Image (tube, rainbow, N blue to C red):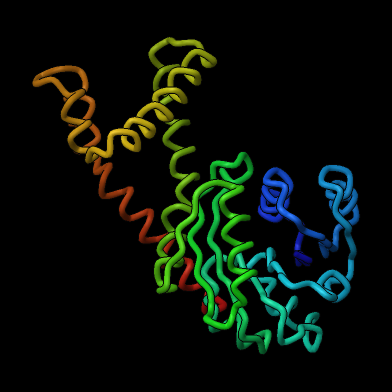
Length: 266
């Protein structure tokens, strides 16, 4: 599969690393305007690089748009007239719907993917969809590529990609803040920072793994660790009194709304 990347940022690097890790057959060229970044990609991943996006996509079966949403119009102007009808464009732009991408690029073969940052270590979560005109081999390759960076879910309705943007794509940031808060609390109690960090990280990883392995509802597992009148019950009460659930829900809804704004060019 010949692939041309438009943009060589963190997520582009994660996708390319996944392709290499899975030993997928791919000839990759990255269009990247920053020279030091081009050198880093060549040294680290052995890909061809260029500062010319039109050259990056020449002859590519799959064109990956991995720029910021605000950079889409500029990229579209640069690629105007360069896309062949049989090429497929895969976008990882947050909030930008396939309809908008299709209009800007005047193109029909489209895939939209919403990955997240744990893809960098092969533990990502991606949600994706495509137009019916995308060739089967390209869809199959996309599935293999996303498997290489973690788990993925294909959806027929694009609205779920927008929801995933607010949940799984933005979600790592919410988790990082929670990790920070737990570590800070332990340090306040007098625990050494490194010890607190180890306890917190293993607690979160183990808890998530337990939910996944047992298939039980989180509420059931929460009840198993909550003794009447015990320490966990007191801690949970403090979270409820502070509106913890409501704040988490508001965060996801706010992220969703911002994604909609980005999709409309605001």
